[in-house]
Image (cartoon, rainbow, N blue to C red; front, side):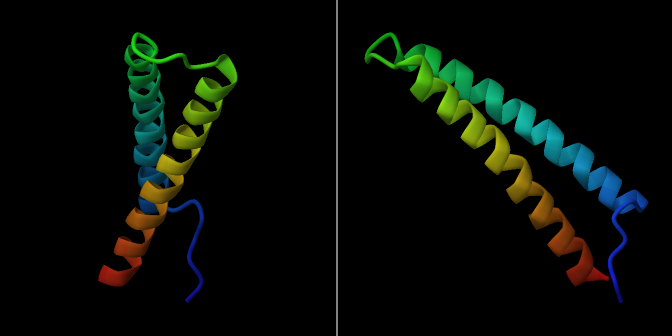
Length: 73
């Protein structure tokens, strides 16, 4: 069976993953803000971390949710 890309479950998983990505980016930004009080962090390093974590988290969450959904089906 071929998985559908726009069924209700996938849309819900996508919404959850995007929320995780947003909060991961926020947490990374706050973490870097507090880290900068003790150690110098360049803008390039900070942007790299925010974008990397903000992209990786939703990808991992979405793949986990989809895999769990198809395993239980």
